[in-house]
Image (spheres, rainbow over the protein chains, first blue to last red):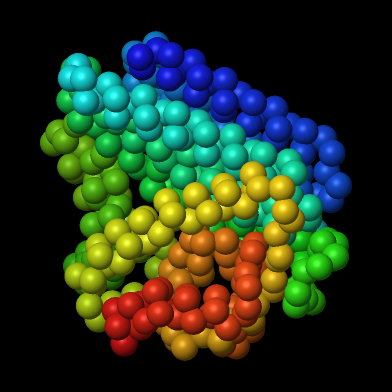
Length: 89
Length: 110
Length: 162
């Protein structure tokens, strides 16, 4: 049963990632695109966790943690760039 | 693995996947930037949280003992989602992103 | 020299220490030593960013608050999901929320809570820390949202911090 649920969930998260890519391409403003990338990295974390469950290993958790940290920092950096025109003042 | 754990894991997985999808649908179809901000900050964060929880239950019921790394990632996501939403909202107000026609009230000038 | 060997922010040090134990593979002698070093050095390095101490008066109320917020987050995501999937278009509102809290940490906890719960995102704070700009996805009236937030989140936080 878990296998079926797992594949269904992977399908749903992949569809979600595709919708995020749609918003990333369509825009129309820069904050929309940054928001789309922000959501995309959270979906990538979900996909990595699901891959870990599928393969029965915890090895991928470290990379999920790294993506979480780097994704947050880059979102904040991009938001700050949009607001101030520079990242580090 | 017990029957109960199996049901719980499957339910949490489907719940998480559905919410991640709903967050993305919101991002794709809501009318303006400020309303789009709501989908990812809530639905997606909750969805990923549920998937993490199912992973915790799965690995602790299979064999390897309890490990809280997933909880750490979830707590991190729950702490950072409001911060990035706030930064993006400020950036959007600075740029002057258009609001949908029937919005009441106005964003502040930056 | 030993004057500097203190922990200016015991809460932060505890959180750092426990986080390090969770991150490393099992609690061993090495991870405890490294955790202690990190718990000492990071508060020292970031001291300049946190000039005032977190003014918790009743920290034991925090777990109840977190549980309540978690429950609200799950309920909130159901209502937001319903709004996203329903065909009618939402009625978004910008609300100026008058803050009664004064402590900066309390305000940031309130703002984060608002962002995570029913249909609201905190968008900005005025320069004098008195007003919070909130964007609500679907609100019947300003006053209703303000009363909701005040009763369920700001009041408990005020009891904790003042």
